[in-house]
Length: 180
Image (spheres, rainbow, N blue to C red):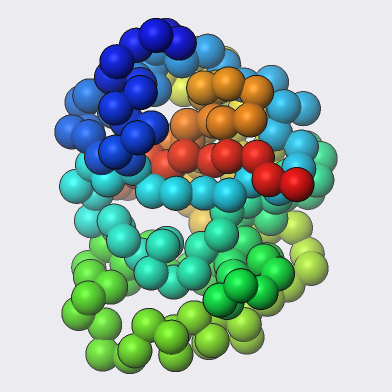
């Protein structure tokens, strides 16, 4: 897969058709839990998912994996400030699927500042090894949302994530890159 042109295109453009992105995901090797320890910067892979644009518009920085029982799945960042973890709100995903960030009546900088009110030091997710799409790999389970993120390894510092929400057919894909 290292020389796969579809992988390189996905990493460079961060845009693909859903079937193409899933084929790349399926061709990548599994991720052991301990590969994920640390802080990761995230970016969306644009596949036409209804939530597309929300994480980046809201100031999403990425994820932080402390150990298998303690994960901060939503690290946010205001400007050049230090990333901080927030609580995930039930219902937020349903709202994000129905409303484009461009159609939001609130200005995005105000939304980002409001996220500061959701900051927490408490873990909001955990990691398990689960079989997803025929491969057992590291999978993050949110504590308060019916969502799981499964990871496949691009290299030692890059993973491709596949978010699946209960009751929603179309998965959401994202890229994580390790940061100090």
